Image (cartoon, rainbow, N blue to C red; front, side, top):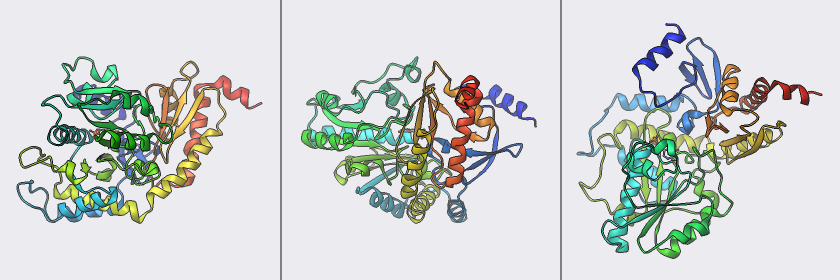
Amino acid sequence: MPVKSVIEREARFSAKNYAPFPVVLSHGRDAYLFDVEGKRYIDMMSAYSAASFGHSHPRLVAALTRQLGRVDLVSRAYHSDNLGAFCEALAKLSGLDACLPMNTGAEAVETAIKAARRYGYDRLSIPQDKAEIIVAAGNFHGRTTTIVGFSTEPSCRRGFGPFGPGFLAAPYGDAAALEALIGPNTAAVLIEPVQGEAGVIVPPEGYLAALRRICDRHGILLIFDEVQSGFGRTGRNFCFEHENARPDGLIVGKALGGGLLPVSAFVARRAVMDVFDPGSHGSTFGGNPLAAAVALEAMRLLQDENLARRSLLLGKTLRETLARVDHPAIVEVRGKGLWVGVELDPAKVKAKDVCLAMMRRGVLTKETHATVIRFAPPLVIEEADLLQAIEIFQDALADVHPAHAASYAL
Ligand SMILES: *Cc1c(COP(=O)(O)O)cnc(C)c1O
């Protein structure tokens, strides 16, 4: 079927909640994706960090296939023989005590919200239905009605109210401003250690450690949403490790499923996790044997292939090389590990046009917030491909802004 018809069929029979680029992908391997015509692309998007291990990593595929030959889904009404190993590995990797597995990131965020509120009532004596959670302006934590209720993005919220109370938004990166919002009914602080969807916003150094001290001082919970920043993306297994700011609760997802399956979890200290008793929370698919098998293998891969270290080193190369790209439209290059946002001046170029030009030249990425191009390749990417992607970014800038290309060729 011609590409145009494939795209038209999808458009005709699917919701319009995404505006995908006009490319139809059919297979992938490592840091490459291929379209239906066999054209190869370097993946600088990694499915929003879910494909951190590259596409169809043979060890992940083998782990999933092995498990498919044993048993698929037994439900949490019974024990299964690999759930304990999965939870143990994740608890140990994060330095926390216990896990509650879910499927999507948003579900794990919802789990964290429930845990924080119940902890607030049971342990902090907050009056019933008064618990507050402090979040950050510009946050992205998922798409459920509760979660979009505390988003500060009009496009995420419009028409979806009424929204529940109990959330306060502090400016991101300003620990003192956040502390000023803490009151007698505050149960927790919920923060992304780097704001991904907001445009790869890296908070000032010391912010995470300051949040840890503030939450300790007020006896409230610190919860980090590492759905996107976790599993090596920022150059450490978890971003909080950069500042030794271990949270009381940690939300993980995306790469945990190895890019093969939706696997997420809320991980916490025992005292926090123990607010849940039978019947209080659950998920039909959460922690199923297939998910547990893939997630276990993903965590082993992270260690065996030293991917956090790789992300740290290649991330430095990525930032330094991008910083040398001399173009008047580039406002800022920022990031941590293999996760970089290039902020462009919208008066000079549209980020989307640059992404489309990159696509034509064989690199896939996506703008965020109309002005930022993200560079977040699989952590297994080869350095040569990383450098080639940056060259193609330069060429794409020239495609979109030809007058300028000529001027700096002088
Ligand atoms: C993607 C993301 C989520 C939501 O994950 P889904 O699997 O899409 O529900 C939550 N938090 C952060 C920080 C994310 O990047």
